[in-house]
Amino acid sequence: MTSVATREPPFTTGLAPYAGTLPGHISASAAKNYLGCSLRFWFERVACLRKPTSPALHLGKAVHATLQAFHLARWRGGDDSPEAVAAAYDRAFHELERDEGPVNFDDEADREKNRLDGLRVIAAYLDSSEVLTGKPRAVEVLLKESIPGLSVPLTGAMDLVASDYTPVDFKSTASRPDPWGAAFDHEIQLVSYQLLMEAATGVTPPSLDLVFLVKTKTPQVIRVKSPPADARRKRRVVALLETVVAGIAEGRYHPQPSMPCSWCQFKNECMNWCPDMTLPGADRRTA
Ligand code: SF4
Image (cartoon, rainbow, N blue to C red; front, side, top):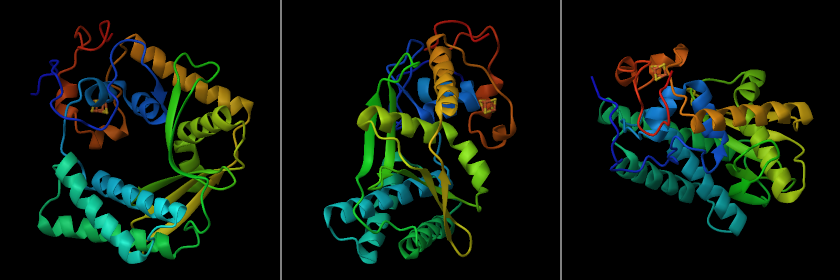
């Protein structure tokens, strides 16, 4: 079995590392990761154990980088032609594999199938009624703001901010999302974006949007709109974020067996966990 001993990570995971102290900030993605399973969070973001990238994650990152290039081109009046977008995708697919791989492709045919799946889903977005047409307010916005009720700053990176201040986040997925379930799953992220937007600009966005790029045989592009959060929804999300901040600060990391264990890459390490184990980076024993 793999040990969970501490070590200096000899690589970058692209994720902000967290220690067993009050974190410098909290993001919606870190919070969702921690709430899903605090021990998996520890493996990924405290111990920074490296695992091969799954094809789905690799594809999602390449699609995300390509949409960013397309939206930036549209924002700045650059080359947003389908050819330029396809070239940006091939570049991202290759560079992410080189810099953040290896990717768990079965073989070269599987790699090519995944590459083509990404190209198809991007082409579907460019042809869809959901494609960005006018000039957005901003692309890939990084915000860090103090939020009442939260003891550390909240951070977030919005894929796109529409001209009316609607934050838009893009998701690659294998199956068609149920709108209510999708909004529920991403509530922490959507409301965090609203909190950041309100703190940074004083404006409440008219909608909180997710655009799903669905990798079905015939790719689909589905927008899920969520109304802006009222005071109760905001309090609920701030409380969830603060629960995570407290958990990290107190070094609370333990297994949370559930359905996602089926695809967790840390099952062997998880089996090594014991309640009397001191996890490096955590201030206290985990139970
Ligand atoms: S196997 Fe399950 S309980 Fe263990 S770290 Fe992974 S998600 Fe958590």
